[in-house]
Image (cartoon, rainbow, N blue to C red; front, side, top):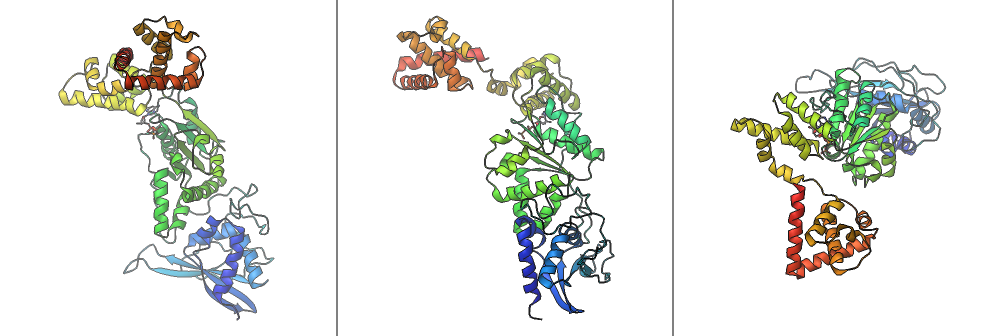
Amino acid sequence: MDRSRDDVWNECLGIIRDNISRQSFRTWFEPLRAVGLEEEDGALKLTVQLPSRFYYEWLEEHYFALLRKTITKVLGPGGRLYYDIVIERDEPAAGGRRGSSMELPARQPANVPPAERMPKVELPDGVTPPRTSTDVPSDAGRAVDPTRGYDGGASAPRRAPSAHPFAFPGVKPIEVDPHLNRSYTFERFIEGDCNRLARSASWAIAQDPGGTSFNPFLIYGGVGLGKTHLIQAIGNYALANNHAKTVRYVSSEMFTAEFVQSIQSNRIAEFSQFYRGVDILIIDDVQFFGGKEKTQEEFFHIFNELHQQGKQLVLSADRPPKDIVGIEERLLSRFQWGLAADVQPPDFETRVAILNRRAKDDGTKVKPDVIEYIATHVKSNIRELEGALIRLQAHAALTSREIDQDLAREVLKDLIKESRPVLTIEAIQSVVCDYLGIPEDLVRARTRKREVVQARQVAMYFSKEITNHSLKTIGLHFGGRDHSTVIHAVRSVEDQVDTDPSFREMVGNVQKKLEMHQR
Ligand SMILES: Nc1ncnc2c1ncn2[C@@H]1O[C@H](COP(=O)(O)OP(=O)(O)OP(=O)(O)O)[C@@H](O)[C@H]1O
């Protein structure tokens, strides 16, 4: 024999590499070693060692046609491929887990007892092999979409998973810890206009993961508005009602850390397999994938695989997909394949309902006026809203005081000061003009009288400081002036505050008046 088994296998790997994605190649073929090359009945027989039975099933299911084509090309028409599968037994032998091996010809049913030798069957060339429980496309020579892997593409059949996704060789099936917080349920989630679409879609998905058109499903919105709660509620409900066997919730940071760890410990294939095997993959805060190219690539392939298998992907982000930075376009576009729904800050009634619900869950009685007091003052973040109630409950318990408005005012004064109501531009104009004795409409008029210009500039300055409006919007509220006029006004006020003590005092006094209006 002229060529060694390594030469032959390397030649095969060259062909395989050209036909599948880099990631699939690294996962499924790079770890394989050729362990034998023999001549049998005038034909060459190559034996490749597989690290597990799971590999065997996967290769047969996904790469059968490609392997057949490759072996025929490299070994000739009579060429055969055999797998030597390392089996680890469930019961560790004395001294630990012991490996053994079994040899299987390509394309055999996989449910073979360990260490049993299969009858040798030629890798078929024209012979229809016995099929495993699933079907694979046999068009080995077709063009391949490198982003989908060899057997990807729109025409690929939807497959049922062939084996337990975590059935690594002889190792007991891994218990998948879903990493879910059990208190994040639909029952505990208060629906309002602010989250109706996100909540309804989550509910539909939880009933039928992977079966709706909301796949992937992405919830986006600001801090503390219930994104994590909702995405976990999907997982909790689906598990509790047997709509999914395996659910995995993971933050994007944790996913990245696990991926890095898998690289360091040479377990990328396991990592990849683990995530490709779940029924519902929930990833929180995907914006943190930004700039992490390798993680994105890995996630991209996992995403494709799960989506193709009809598994459910649920994601959250702190902003709409189009505004997420540092994420590859191909991934961003996938985020938008299904449904992206936002969550907004809750309105007053929803805040009251959330607080009532929370108090009930905690078994505390909180009077309606106290609930309303908190709901009036803590507006933009539900975590803070709940935090305010918890603080109040704790304080009342520790000091044996009744929860009333006085206690609420006392305990929550920092929090409530921080969330002072934001003044409107009109209110600012009114306070400034009142202090400086200028008719309010003049700041919006064309006049360039010195005292009016000063009042206008001070009002523009505070509008920029206090409100969240853009310079353009502020300018429009001052008689349709443009943003450069606002910039000039702000600079002028800052300069005079630095250089003119009486001007500084005037601005300080106006500020105090404005603060009084914010109480
Ligand atoms: N509609 C709601 N009904 C009941 N509780 C809610 C609701 N929305 C949020 N919460 C509660 O508010 C807290 C914060 O919510 P969550 O952690 O889901 O926010 P988030 O949007 O994921 O925030 P972040 O962006 O900071 O991760 C949680 O305790 C959650 O249970």
